Image (cartoon, rainbow, N blue to C red; front, side, top):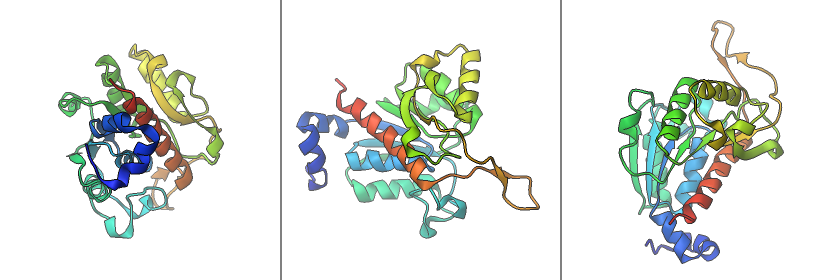
Length: 240
């Protein structure tokens, strides 16, 4: 067991046995952006012993408003590399594995080779997200998914529950429809979502491009991520 003083307050709350469970846990986080970055923060500071971090992207300036790993000093750098460095600063004893890759149906089998206690799905590409969730459901892999945090402002409407019970979330609606068509039981999928009606719709990034983005607040994405981390910790401390 890690004997460093940095985790004594967590152990004082949970007890030695449950703290040991966290040290011995393997957590995979897929997506290290606005939500995933805060999941990572919670996992690292909880003393998780083995983290597998998955992302393909690099930081750009538009990430700074909401992504905890996005700083002036990290612009242009790979999210996986920055994440690994941050975890090492928080918990040098953590075994950190990074996978610089875009998750798709073609590489899911390779992704899940090691034994993993829980997976956090924090990606927002609908096709990849649905492929990932379907694979985990069919292979009995324990996971929590993040639904849409953009276009929301009310922190009191953020909830943890079943995918089948989500409402007022465009991403949830798309994911539910696709997974139902594939015969996946969505009543067994745990996720964090917001029941708040979406705020203003997408806006064009500039006058010369058709590219659109959705507005988001740092507070909402942070609470999404930390809620997921908290629920994962509750699951991990009770494992046999």
